[in-house]
Amino acid sequence: MVEVKLPAALASECGGERRLAVDLPPEATLGEVLDAVEAAHPRLARRLRDESGRLRRYVNVYIGEEESRRLQGLATPVEGREVQILPSIAGG
Image 1 (tube, rainbow, N blue to C red):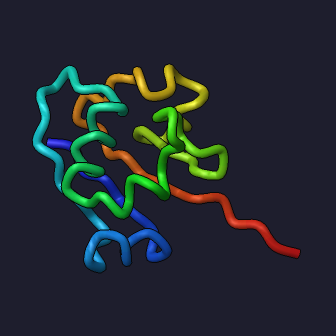
Image 2 (spheres, one colour):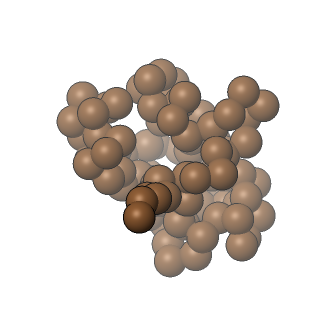
């Protein structure tokens, strides 16, 4: 079981849910976790990945305390660790 945490800005795409439980095998990758989340919440898919399936550049995904781009990206094994999705915030 992998827990996916979402900020309030993305919860509206999941019926207001801020935590999603994803039941996958222990060797699942981040890409597989996102596939499962996006299958259950298709509106969220457009906010997380581009047309080629890559994470949008303004979306940061943490596996445990590590940012996924500093690991193996979508190929990073999650191994039951918490996944947190955080869109970048810009302003001035």
